[in-house]
Image (tube, rainbow, N blue to C red; front, top):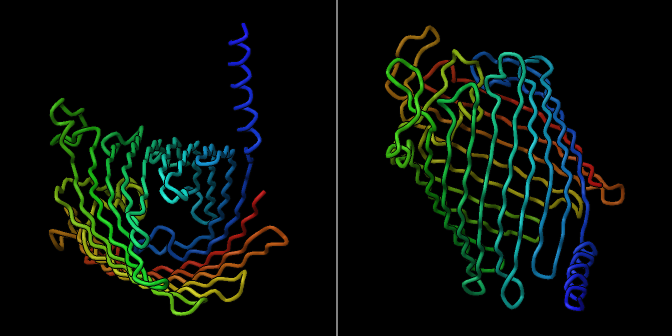
Length: 373
């Protein structure tokens, strides 16, 4: 009896100690964006887009570990293209553990499950998303940090079974500080995508066989180099070069018969193309509470198995090729005493393509207010 009481006492003390370090947090952000090409194609449809993001979390912290449970909700309202209105809800869990003499090494595990809802003809894109990821960051020595990671994604489209898939990806990253102001990052990724159904010659879908389920439909390797340079205490610059190429090329593309969106989970799947992406970012701390960023980049996209056509549907080339150029201006202000933040951004995009339908430009102006609780 005494041992049982002791056991109960130990359990209660653990629970009380955990509650002592528990924190409840919530944040709401409201965003309004004017986009002169919401579908990112030659149709050039304009719309105001209002976005509401809600996050609520419960954090339990120990001396060397933490457990975070959270909910994320996103609501997107398209004023001029009402059918595009959608929402996504997810439940998330993140566990973090620190090790090393000063807690410099970190293990992180994260998992989530969510569902996206659309309306009208776009209910075709309703989908569930389940993710699991693990990452371990380790200090090899004072100036070199290595990070290894694995992630799993499962996406299910109830009405588009041939596009449902699972994804496995591994990552290896090394960050080296040459000086206090100069850092270089090297990263390699290897990802595989397994479609859950085969597509037969008549266009219908059928389940894969036992052996076929072990063979990925698409395998992509990515290499990235990033160099960051601090110029002053308030100014920094970074340059990034990223190249991705597909070792296996059986990507599926959603035809325009299903809709007009070009940049989403189906149309803009990064497994669908390969090429070089370079970017340059300038960051300046304008004051203790104001930060500005200017980012520009060029991305070459060679689509693996997608042909190019003119606006009348006539064949132009075996492979669609795009050159995507963009500039982003971002200004962020923290109102510490009032407890909220403001962000303003301008995006300028030019997409040059040998497929006339995807030869377009895009300007978007965004204002966001974030309120933590």
